[in-house]
Length: 178
Image (tube, rainbow, N blue to C red; front, side):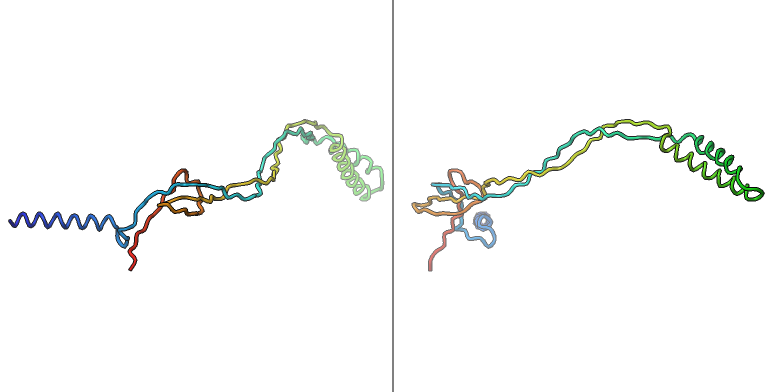
C-alpha cells in the first residue's frame, strides 16, 4: 500500500513539473503558436542612390633615359685642358692659381659635357596604371512588406521585413477577462 501511494505521488509530481516546465518560468500557459492565412502582400519600396566602384587598368609605354656614369674621361680631359690653358696666364704664384682654376673649370665643363652628350641609352618599358571610377545610379529596393492576413474570421494588417509566404506565424495569447 505504501509502495502504491509512493508511486502515485511520484507520477502526480512528475506530471505537475512537466506542465510547469512546458509553460516555462513566468510564461502564460495560454500562449501558443498558430498560423493565419495571408490574403495580400504588397512590397514597400524606396528609391536609393547606389555607388558602384569600378577599377579600370591600362598599360602605358614610358620612355626612360639612362646615362652611363662609368667613365670619368670627360672630367679628367677637361681638367687637363683647363690646367694647360690656365698655365698660359700669369707668372709666379699667379700662374699656379690660374692653372688650378683652369683645371677646376675644365673639369666642370667636361662633367657638363658628359651629362648632355655622354653615353646613355633610351628604353621603353610598359607600366600598368589603374584608376577607380565610380558609377552612380538610382534603383528601387524593397525595404519591407505590408501584409494583410486572416485569422479566426477577422482580417489583420502588419508590416514585415520578409515576405511571409502563404501563411503567417502568430503567437496567440488567451487571457481571461475578470
